[in-house]
Amino acid sequence: MSDLLPVEDAVARILEHFQPLPVETINLLDSLGHVLAFDILADIDSPPFPNSSMDGYAVIAQDTQGADQQQPARLRVVMDIPAGSMPADAIGAGEAARIMTGAPLPDGANAVIPVEQTDQGWRSGENPPLPDYVNIYRTVDPGDSTRPRGEDFMVGDVVLPALTPIRPQEMGVLAALGYSGVPVICQPRVVILSTGDELVEVDEPLTPGKIRDVNGYTLYGLVKAYGGQAVRLPIVRDNLEDARLRFREALEYQPDIILSSAGVSVGTFDVVRTVLEEMGEINFWRVNLRPGKPVAFGHVGGVPFFGLPGNPVSAMVTFDVFVRPALLKLTSQPDAVQTVNAVLGEDLQSDGRRSYLRVNLRRDGNTLIATTTGTQSSGALTSMVKADGLIIIPEGVQYASAGEIFSVRLLRPV
Ligand code: AMP
Ligand code: MG
Image (cartoon, rainbow, N blue to C red):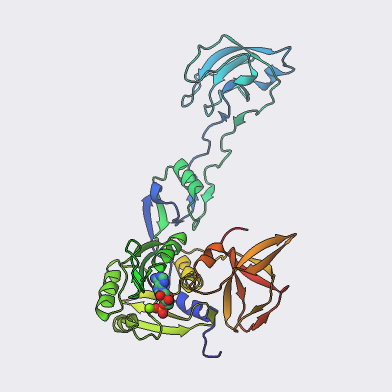
């Protein structure tokens, strides 16, 4: 076991080679999934003025005291305030103003009565003439159906702190603050290479002895899921010329990471390894991890390079363990993996390496019970589809029995 590199040591060595990327300004519409570079401070109150949250009548609450269905309060309608306009005047005692949702409350008014609780209709698509009087069928309290100025945020508030990942709601807040361009941390650019003579492109027919490239797509999805920009190049064939060509092509993208799968083990046709040695410095590590036989890390033409295993499950697991932390560091994101504790529902053999096994989780009261999902072959990618998570059997464990508690890396919410 001693010649196996501990997982944490491998990750630490990798992370030494990554520093957060610079800042750029991008179009607000393109900002989803990016990481905000700076604190965003409000330079306005939101809403900028007290306004109505209903279509109805702005009133002085005291004027409706005791009003009900039998004895409505009768107020004189002095003004119409459509959305987007400012009230021409204040209202006084015994007066009301017709007001639309979002329109500014007139001075004097302190509440709004929804139109449904008056004797007035409000048919859509029309602008009924302003009535002279409105009957109000309920007692209104001060503040009813209104939104005070600055209810959402006020001038000077840090509305979005630096390093916030931008979701649709952050896009909306940025829009409210007038950010048509958003300062973000550059997204890591990752070129993905799949290698092997047995692989065919996704739209090519399968001929005997061939399989379709799978890793090119799972890795593409993983890169995007963790805030990177992915480029997938055509399959690299198991000959020196093709491998040289594709790695040079990869460098033309000036990526932050080059990611390849397969072709870096000790197989006879592992030409990728030869090319890597020509173009950079690569270390081949035997990491104390299962699945995930040899993992290569180094630099090609100055660009950090990961050589992941070819088996589709191994490629995904090693991405999660080694590449994901690097991607997150590039955008200054915390490496918060989603794990839960679960009780093992069966006895398991392990081989002393840290093992990631596909499991389903079942809730029993307050505990989660983990049972393995059929085959644990690292070639069986549907095990990743069926699994709720990866149970992590720590290094040194040869035998785990039902009832023991382990950490589970979630693949979907439970
Ligand atoms: P290797 O690392 O080249 O020995 O490949 C290990 C296993 O993974 C073999 O069964 C390969 O056929 C398979 N494999 C390699 N690359 C891919 C890929 N891109 N998509 C699907 N399977 C692959
Ligand atoms: Mg191969």
